[in-house]
Length: 328
Ligand code: FAQ
Figure 1 (spheres, rainbow, N blue to C red):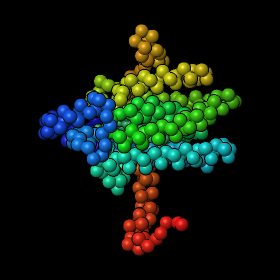
Figure 2: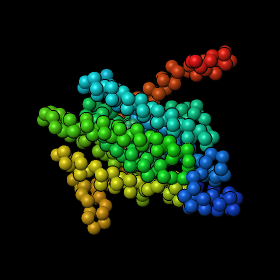
Figure 3: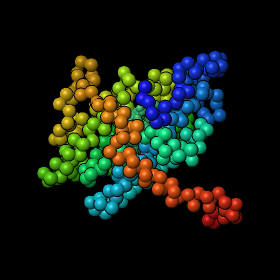
Figure 4: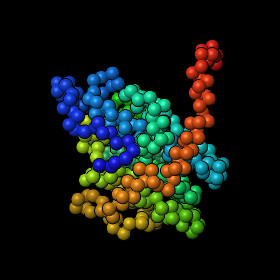
């Protein structure tokens, strides 16, 4: 449905008919029993491809996600904030390492994944294609983007693929520190001068639409949710995660006296669901397919990093490295 980029033509429900029916039934029974699938286990080709797609995109989102906040390290207000932000950015890059390792267990090399990122074949989260103009934008990311990531990752950590779930558990533990750090930064602005409050309000106005997009297209138009839910790769739908995020964070934002830029936003107490203006899915499609405000810049930074690091990778592979012993 969402063309361009990393669409897997091979991932179609009818491709399952090529699988051995008995093996497929056993695999699905294991998933139904809540067992974890491990790298050496039999799995349908579609499960493998879907996992590679999703974990790889998640890994890319972590390293690209380090960029908008990374630019604020030198400008963060005060030494403590600089230290905390530097540690957070370092953590995000570490998360990418964990995720790439999990995706590698499914047979795609890290080099290929990074190539596909740089050439624009693979996707990464829409939200990191927007600029962090002010310190308050960086605070929005640390509090609310991390909050959204935690909603998603806590659910998926209970999923079916062992290496991905274990990576997510570890990532969530670190993300919970990021969330506290981000919340602290926002409280500081909220209880500061009128100018500081205004800075955060403006950040909220800029980031709300990308934040609503962050959980993926609505369930009515999502391409992969059905099969991913069936195989317990995704443990809740895009709309359910969006709703859970709104449930947890809208009251906190309102409590601080900020206005969410959506006049239709309200909780329907009968359905227990949030009502909101339908996100602009055309903008979402444009941004995830390469045409957002910062896509080119983000990929260019990664391309330069790859180029500058090439000599290190080549040196590590060279035969003379066999004689380099680890530090005693
Ligand atoms: N951005 O059929 P669905 C973080 C694509 S980590 C870009 O619904 P699915 C940490 C999707 O790939 C943030 N593309 O897809 C941090 C597909 O295109 P394709 C990342 C998106 O997979 C914090 C098409 O749309 N988290 O923030 C997005 O069932 C602060 C159709 O969509 C993860 O990756 C999007 N938002 O559901 C770092 C979590 N949504 O591939 C630094 C794992 C959808 O067919 C600072 N991933 N698309 O061409 C997931 O849970 C799922 O992949 C979803 C999307 C929920 C993101």
